[in-house]
Image 1 (cartoon, one colour):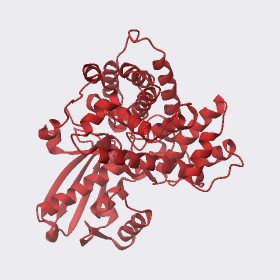
Image 2 (cartoon, one colour; image 1 turned 30 degrees about the horizontal axis):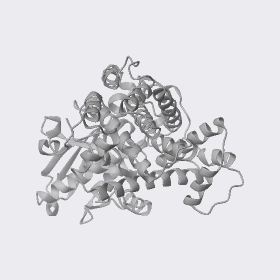
Image 3 (cartoon, helix red, strand yellow; image 1 turned 90 degrees about the vertical axis):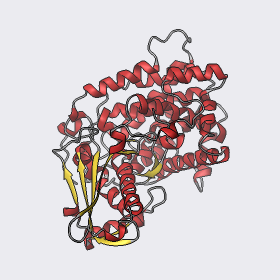
Image 4 (spheres, helix red, strand yellow; image 1 turned 180 degrees about the vertical axis):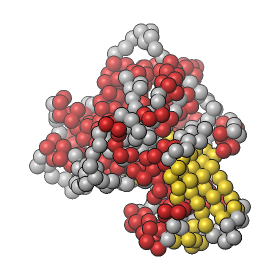
Length: 476
């Protein structure tokens, strides 16, 4: 079983997809590291990239081509600007040049260097890619295969064959492999879920680093909501999808005056709303994040890019409308609890839509948010687990069917529904007697994985089934 940190579950990057953008970006970066460590960089004259399965079928709509180019170019998805992305892409598309690892210029022809192998699926995972480095004579210097397994997590063939970092697995004092084990730790130690997770995190980094890192995660989340609520226009990709969050925001927040994000948030917190409007706000927050994501903006995987709007929307609901004092400490604890729930799904099932459909993205994010909100409301560890179970139970079987391979239809709206279900699940869990649930979180995780394995390939982020097949929208 893996040791998964809160900073593995929540990663800062750019849209539109954690598995199809961030994962391939990181894989390309790892390939560069291999070339450097093997002292092969000076001999490389050409790099070829093969994309398989879901990466090939929906890669262009998800920005996979851009991601591998940026990764090979040596750029960091956490800090890179849109200007640098555009410059690197223009160099490849118009000059057939790529600066490998920001060190060596090589010839790189988009049409011949990147191959979308749409009819091939590698056995281990649908999101597979191969990088091949050649010298001037055409001899292969290095060939590596990677798998983007969801949420920006990337593994290579050694992981597929069972070779993992066992030393790292021993660092957590309270390793968690199931919801039952997590509950046992809480009972035995007399700690909350957040406290157990924090204790484990201290084995990896200082408490100051943890709190600073969590604050950075929330800062990017909040910024993505604010930008999404105030940026108008048409999303890229050819579907002509207009950003809706700004229009909703204007109707919900007419004639409000503020100069920046901080004033905006304070204004939100001080305004009183009726219940229907509160749900509209939750939808608006979620839409805002995923419209930013679809426009290649900076967001936080939570646990994926495609589901990045659920957790910020539910957290903002708690901050602005839930009648409880929520400061940075409470936000940090929410994120700690949510990350542990996400890690349980990753260990016991999947967070990859290419492996499990959208239940693995929106379903998992809804379960994470439900547990976090239950914790903020004073819920016990058991009630947090119940909330996560309820949220996922009612996402089981949800397919991934992005129209034209873009993370827009129906992906953006699904974040709104996932957030609202999380709030409902938290409410149910908080009023549930401890001995009444008949289905455990471990049961639903196992069921989700069995459902994923039974799900037809067409409904796993291939754009070959569902809405992607029946809704044929013209190019705009």
